[in-house]
Length: 123
Length: 338
Image (cartoon, rainbow over all chains, first blue to last red; front, top):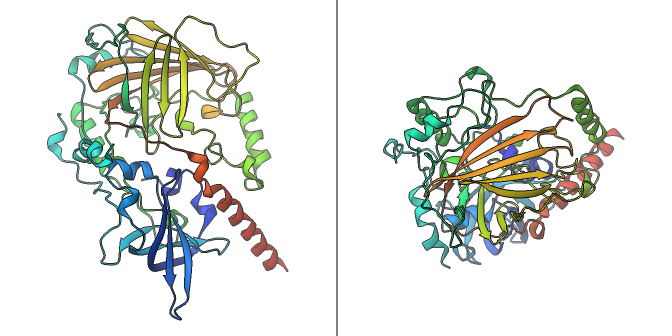
């Protein structure tokens, strides 16, 4: 499959740094349900107890809407874990490579892409 | 509207619905030469009519496809798969998912499957074509030397300045237009959804990405004067039997579909073949770019609406972030050089 960056509206490679992987655990403070990309705002508590705010870039909301995921599906206060890469300018932004709830469930409903059954071929 | 209720059919088709057209349509679609097959009355159900009697193209449609625009070279002159080969190919393409290695630029993205953006999560109308481009080569004709030089000069002028400012970024990053919007329309990586509406004297095509409407007069009026150039050109339509034919000229040289010039001329043909299928065909000629015209076709499949808003620029943090990333890299390079 083609490199994912070729699928994007804009260059993630110009925006985020592959040498700055991050794993963030925190609570959702806002979800911006906007195109071309959704943005999740979250508060992350560090080991010293200090709270920092992060913005996480995700995919197009339109596809999520078609699969039943709405803005209301991720209410403020939800605990999530984000794995991605930090912005090149070192600000508190990251791409949301993998997004999970605190209990390990995947955040979004993306169905398995490789379960195309044979018996649909003739329909 | 409750989005959940509206997406149930999509969920049931999450692994893609194969909707092969009747065998007769395939037989008809096999052209002897590199020419778009013209739909005949045998292919068309005449039951689809708007209230005022026009052939009915209305609805929400997907141009999603797993078929490449150009035929992979290893398939040579093989223009069509057998039905069995086509099924196997589509199954393979729909099952494919992105593979990236941690710590690489390819990994700096969001998980396509989680966001419902992989091909296998989308309804795709099936075809036995090996490429959307029809004919023995299945590829865009070689570019004329002058056109290649023109495009190379433009690329050279941009090289090293890609991140100087927003005007140097791609048209899609500027939220002006996506290359898939055309005309001609081609499958986008995702959200390949359009809505066709027909009114008296006009056909409108709304494209979800990135929320542009082509308003096509079908009243016999002529094209705009040649000095008026538009991102999507100037489209004029008319009916030929069951087929809507749309003629587009007056492009700018900036949209440059596959390296085309402002002299690009596109003829699109829309033919309703079934309740859930439109055959979309197009032919391009541009004497400033290619020595010969070329044609392609793809089936559109009907999907459940609505088309969602895609207010691109309202959320275009990406532009700012791309530029701030470039400035950070420049500073780092400067510091390293000291």
